[in-house]
Length: 196
Image 1 (tube, rainbow, N blue to C red):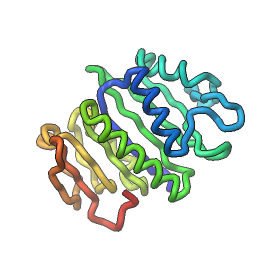
Image 2: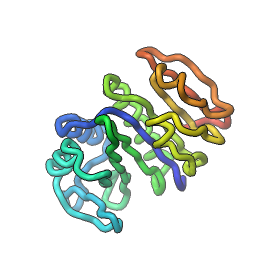
Image 3: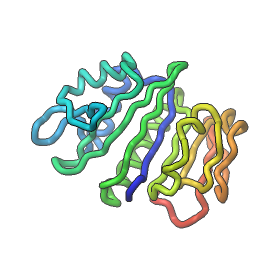
C-alpha cells in the first residue's frame, strides 16, 4: 500500500483535544507510546527518532510550534503509523497519516478511526481525503483542501468537504457526489471497491 494516505484538514488541535485523540487511538489498539520503550517518538527533520512523552507532544501541538510536527503511533513494537501535523495560518492544520507498511486490516482500523474522529470533531473538521491505494499521492492535496487550488487527475477512495467549500472546488473526476448531514458533501471514487 505504498503512498497510501489520509489527510484531515481541521481547525487547530488544542492540547486537550489531542489528549482525547490519544484516548480514541488507544481504544482502537494504537498507542502513542512504543510498546517496548513506553515512550513517545517524534521524528526530526532527518527522520531520526526523538524520544519524548505524550504530554510534551500534546503541548507542542497545542502551541503550534514550528511549521510541522511528525510523530509515530504504534500498532505493535514493529508497526508504526507515521503522522504529520502541518500548521497553517488562520488557526488551521492538516493531519496526514501515511498508510504505507500497514496491513489491510491496520489500514481499515486507521480509516475507521480517522473517519469517526472526523465526525466527532464536526465543529472543527473541514475536510478529509482517504486514498488507500496512493493513486492520488502526487497531487497537492494541501493546497486543494486549504485553498481550492487545482483538481486531482483521478479520484481518491473518499473525499468529504464542507458544502460551502465544495462550491469552490473542482471535484475529482469519476467521483460520485452525495450531500451528507451537517453541511458536508461526499465525493466517492467510482473505480473499484474502496476499503472505507
